[in-house]
Structures are given as C-alpha cells and as structure tokens.
Length: 129
Length: 195
Image (cartoon, rainbow over all chains, first blue to last red; front, side, top):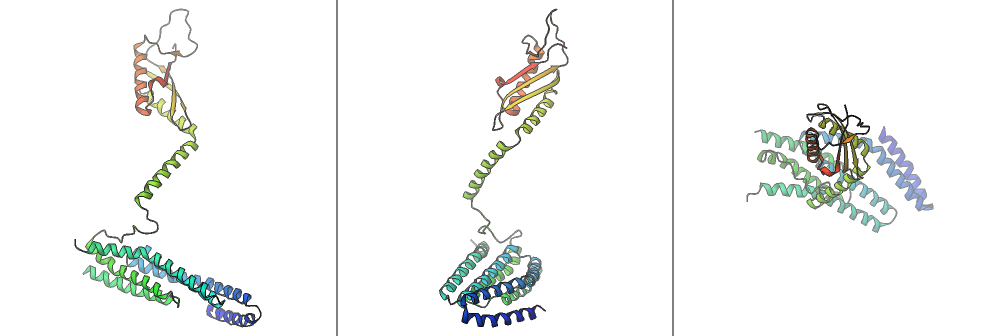
C-alpha cells in the first residue's frame, strides 16, 4: 500500500524534523525538501493515469488538446509554486515564499492569456457587425 | 438536436474534468488563479459545439499561442532559411551534383539529331554555379573526309565549313542556355574527329 509507505515515511520524517529543528535547523529544511521530492516522485506515476483519463475525456468532447495542456501546465506551476513557497515559509523565509507565489501567479496568468484571447476572438466573431 | 446533444455531452465531460482538476488543486493562495483558468477551460468546452454549429470549420484561434509567430518573424525565418540553404549548398557534395548534371546533359544532347554520343565536363564554382562546359560530341551520320595525309589525333574543334556540325553546335548552345542560362561563349564544343 502506497499510503502506508507514505504515512510511515512522513511519521519518521516528522520525528527527525522535530529533533533536527532544535539542533540543526538547516538540516531540517534539507530533510523536508527531500521528503517533499520523494512524495512528489512517488505520486507522479499515479498522476499519469489521471492525466490519461482527462486527455481521453477531452478528446471525446472534441476539445483542442492545447487547452487541456495549458490547464495541466497551470496546475504544475501551481503545485511547484506552492511546494516551494511552503518550504520557504517552513524555513522562516516568508518574504521569499511571497515572491515565489507572486512568480507562480504571473506565470499562470501568462499561460492563461492565449485561452482568454482565443475565447475573446471567437466571441467577437459571434458578434454582429 | 445534434447541437444540443453535443453541448450536453461536452458539459458532462467538462464537469468531470473540472471536478478532477479541482480535486488536484493545491490549497494555497494560488488556488483562485487556477480556478480562473479552469473556468476558461469550461467556457471553451461549452462554446466549442456552438461555434462549430455556426461556423462549420471553426477552431479556437491559437494565433497568440506561444508557438505562433508574426509576419515580421516569418521574414526573419525566411532570411535565416536562405542563409542555411546557402550554407548547405556550399557544404553539399558538389562533385555528386556536377556528375548528375553532366549525366543529364549527356542524355539530353544525344536526343539531338545527328549526335550519336556526347560527353560533358562541367566546371563549377564554390557556389554551385556552372562556369564552363566542355562537350565532346560524336556525330554519327556524317563521315568526314580528310585529304590524304591528314591525321586527327586529338578531338578537332568545330569545323566551320560543316553545316551539320554548325547546326548541332547551335542546338547545344540553345539547350544549355535554356537549361542553365550559360552564355554560349562558356560552352566549348568539340567533335570527335575521323570515323
């Protein structure tokens, strides 16, 4: 069971973190990063099956795959941004965390821009005159 | 009816996809941004069949997509393509090109009445432009009659007095000029002497 492994790993990491935070806070941050990457990697294979289903559904609905691709990119940016921001906050660097979030928001807006323009152009075509 | 069916189907699909995406969303301050993008996705899914019905070959414009490029970019790409082409031409196996052209010319020249065989040797510069063409022609029909004692060891130049050779020369010049735009002065024609 994957969840069993992850829970076990999380508990061990938490105990180590509690100890390390007192003794060596830098090592605690490093351990936290390693744990996050590990969970991320473990979940990637599961994520692939969800993405496969999504792609199949959008293909059946005749929706351009570019749009789903963009949504997934946005989701990825959001996850990575969140992940980095939380790590920075854990390390006590709230300012850096805010900047990471800001960057993620901008990137998401830029990625969403073509969809907005596509919708606007299509709506303009629908408008009479 | 078909349109309604398509809209309903799309909405069902999009509800499923967006629910899945919502489940996957990270809980944080970025969430509203992602929800907005998902909202756009839903809008597209609903608009798709409607626009497809109104405009038969409609697809959402992707002109502003990352991979798209403007007309000014297009010119730049063409220029780069031209430079690349030049580079390739310089690097290409010119010997092979020369041989092919020689073969083509030989094949065309033997179609001229009175020419039994032709051997072309082309000279090209580094840019792949023909600078000179030397053609040795063996005419099959006429037999030259030489006065006793004259022996041709090397290929003889065009005999001005022979009307058939003159005609062949004229045709060869014309063919080469039409094919490669080569000036007749750069084409040297020799007739194999004595049969």
